[in-house]
Length: 340
Image (tube, rainbow, N blue to C red; front, side, top):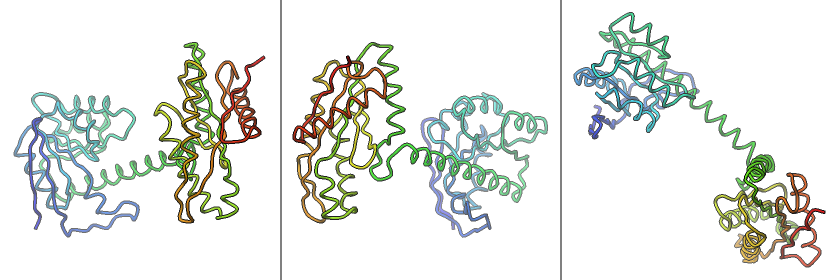
């Protein structure tokens, strides 16, 4: 038996929360029947009787997440909020046509796969809907087997599209972020730095760059092993990220080296304050399975445009200042010399 609980919101939209059925249909391994039955479906029809009938057919075949509305003008806003996996759209409604709804959906979600199946009894409307971008159609009166097949096929394509899109986003994330700490890597840092400097040139403002290296990290690796060193880097990344503003970028550029990009500074004190804060948080012991670990950090500080009027010079100036801090005794910061 299938249990269906229904509630209605102020937009005239209903939500059905359903328990699964035992119906199983063979599908490719990539997208299973459970994933298809978990897809979120929106039924759009101005006739409550049609909504009830179509909902019943979907429930009988195991679909568990079904929303409904009799208000065609609310569809675009609802899709923007919920990103439905399938929209079953009646083409003939008194307040708005199905074609107008599809146009609004396109505007609301211009870059994504639009998962619309139109429901119509008119041959001309079916062709017009397909030309407007509908993925498929269902003719009235419903043929149960055909209805189920068309819904499953469209849902499977939609879920495959979402899986590919998610894989693409994951690949972009991995290409721009450090695998160990999750911080932006050198590639993403340089991209943000370039954009920040372009804005700073136009607005005639300063930018700060903190080049940080850990003191004592090699000794931790040598004594406790690289696994301990990796755990330490993760904790360092978390502390540094929490110590700066959300607008600042913290990047790991390799080994135990980090760069903090400060996009908005008015003077050198605006860069010194976060540098001092970072040095303080790094002096606190790090709790590790091997025992408390004590390290510190050295920082080289450079300001645009005084210490470098492009990316390469700015980073080089901060790097030189970092090694000055190392030579001066570590656990400190040094300010780069101004350009001659």
